[in-house]
Image (cartoon, rainbow, N blue to C red; front, side, top):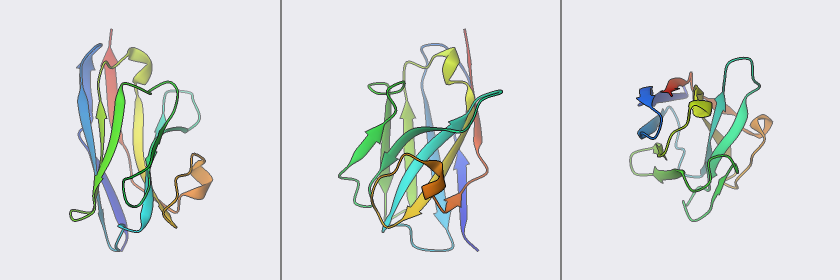
Length: 124
């Protein structure tokens, strides 16, 4: 059974940091591109960041560029999202996703596997 399990969410004050993790199991994800998406209250699910299968290529939404860093450890089948200088508008349910094929994508329709999400709440 393929599973993606996110962790690391929580409540943090504006300006603070959090590190999200996404542990994959049930198949080998080392050849997949991985992405992070988020869905805030009353909003559609939106792209945050993505990383290629090798980790050599990354891509970020403009709203998080310079503040968030995506990385992966293929030996651990885990992808991370380091979030710094958090803002109240970053409050959302954060999902990780896997895209077979290895190349970065920003559209959620291109990802085949999804986790259940981890809540990030940033207070002002």
